[in-house]
Length: 80
Image 1 (tube, rainbow, N blue to C red):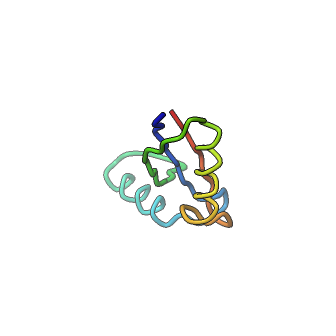
Image 2 (tube, rainbow, N blue to C red):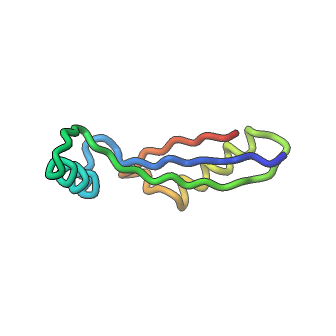
């Protein structure tokens, strides 16, 4: 079975996020009031396996080893 995988990566709470700060300032200059702007990356791909649990294990390993820096990032995995 082929599964669609989505990994949403964000900075951990308390980490400086210059990209989000820049977006927030730019929106303010354009006249929009926003607070708590956050930027994130989403990685999507497909994987094939008979068991969804095996896909989850593999994607978790990918996140720990390559896709994120566990010291500064949080991530959320969605498999459908």
